[in-house]
Each structure stands twice: as C-alpha cells, then as structure tokens.
Length: 209
Image (cartoon, rainbow, N blue to C red; front, top):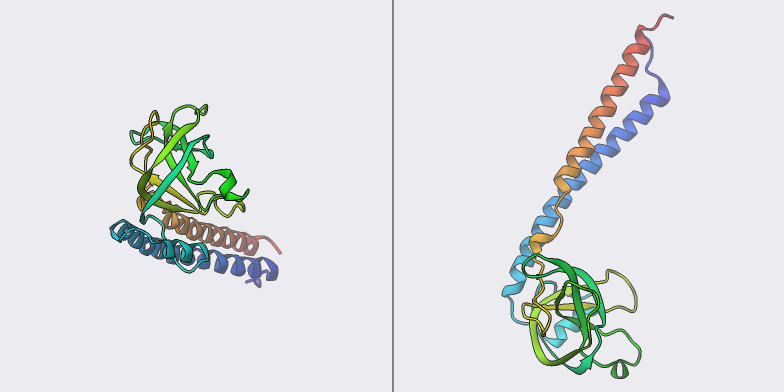
C-alpha cells in the first residue's frame, strides 16, 4: 500500500477540522440567538424606557431594543427626516416616514438621537406633516446600523399621523435564525471533502506503479 500523499492529506485534515469547527460554532450561535430572542420577547412587558436607560444604551451600557417608550414630539410642521423601506400594518410594501422631534436649529446640525415613525406611505413623495403629539411605541436600536451621524434609536408607534397609515412594528420573531442550516452546510462540506479525499487515495493506490 502506498503512503498517504503528504500535502493533500494535510490540506484535507485542516479543512475538515475547520469545517467541523464552523459547524459547531453555528450550533452555539443558534443557542445564543434563541436566548436573545427569548429575552427580547420579554422586553415589551418591561416598564417604559427612562431617559437614563436611553443614555446607558447610547454609551453601550445596556439595551432598550423592543422596549416600550413614550416620546414627546412637537416640532410643528416639518418635512420627513428620512424614508425607509418598510410595510404597513396590513402588509403593503412602501415607505416608513421618519420624523425628528427637534427642529434642525435645536439639533445644531447633529443627527437626532431618536426619530419617530410617523406612519406608512405607499409613495415616496410625502408632504410636510404637522407633528404635535406624544408617541408611544416600540424602540428599535441602530436603525441605520453602525452609520455615523445617524439616529441611534427609532420609535415605532402603532398609530399614525394623518394622512399616513400605521406601519408594521417588527417583533423578535423577525430576527433571522439560519444557524442550523448553516451548521448542516458546514458538516456537509466536511463530509463531501472527506469522500473526495477517500476516492482520490483509493484511485491513487490502484494506479499501476
């Protein structure tokens, strides 16, 4: 019997070990994701977020994701701060109309710390709105990801400012949970590579010397 080929064997061992490790890592991530979703599902039952809790979340010392909050928003007649892709409470695709609760002059050119979803619009050409009310809704952290000079929080009420309609409020169940399928993929890659290596060695040993 011929010796095992050095480099193909080393490559296969390292690659298979990496793939199996990646598979188990995805399984661990799946458990972490399930724990996270469980915690987030409890968040709406907690008391409304206080200013101190908002501040602690801003400096990375806590989280207010999916917590309830009440925001007083009285900037008067303002144009939308931004439009983001979203859906209505009924499932129609369109735009979330975001408004800042402070006027640009008060913000001193900075991005607002929090924006409120005034409602849903099927079209992007939204006219200025008169905003003068107290909103109660669900807090979404980092609606713009890690983008700088963007709001840290977004409040999503279940009501809307006329003529807009209510927007769909996301839930923890909307978080992607594909870790199990990713784990199976890594294990399948490891199995496939092992089979290919076995066929390669078998054919090599059967080859005439």
